[in-house]
Image (cartoon, rainbow, N blue to C red; front, side, top):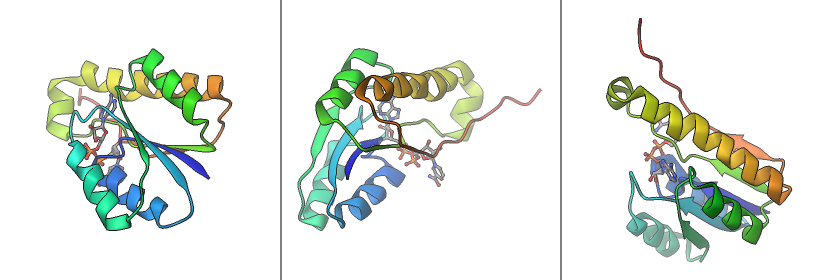
Length: 130
Ligand SMILES: NC(=O)c1ccc[n+]([C@@H]2O[C@H](COP(=O)([O-])OP(=O)(O)OC[C@H]3O[C@@H](n4cnc5c(N)ncnc54)[C@H](O)[C@@H]3O)[C@@H](O)[C@H]2O)c1
């Protein structure tokens, strides 16, 4: 399968990447490295002895994201590009909603345009206590 992995350089994403690469799958990672580093992907390349595509971009950048999806033509998208720090989400709730909710809508629009209908989604949403 062709797997498009958002947030693939992060904690959950990089472990998932390693697992996916152990099968005969082609992968494109899409990450802005806002909470990770490209070094994580280099380590996965070394551990898996596999290569894969990596696009640097923010899921809120609809043009960049749609272009990456159209180029890669994934069979499935695995979505881990999200913010999830509890304390920060309470201090900056709108930034979290924008990144996680608007970002996911941006992803769904890009998937629709690329004709991809399969999504694996794992994200927490935080709410400010009244
Ligand atoms: N860590 C856990 O125990 C756990 C458990 C269940 C679900 N999750 C969910 O999995 C997802 C990833 O969690 P994690 O622990 O790997 O976090 P993480 O911060 O380590 O990884 C998130 C990755 O997404 C990237 N990213 C964030 N916003 C982005 C954006 N707008 N555009 C492009 N890339 C962006 C970051 O640079 C990072 O590489 C989150 O949605 C989280 O809620 C995490």
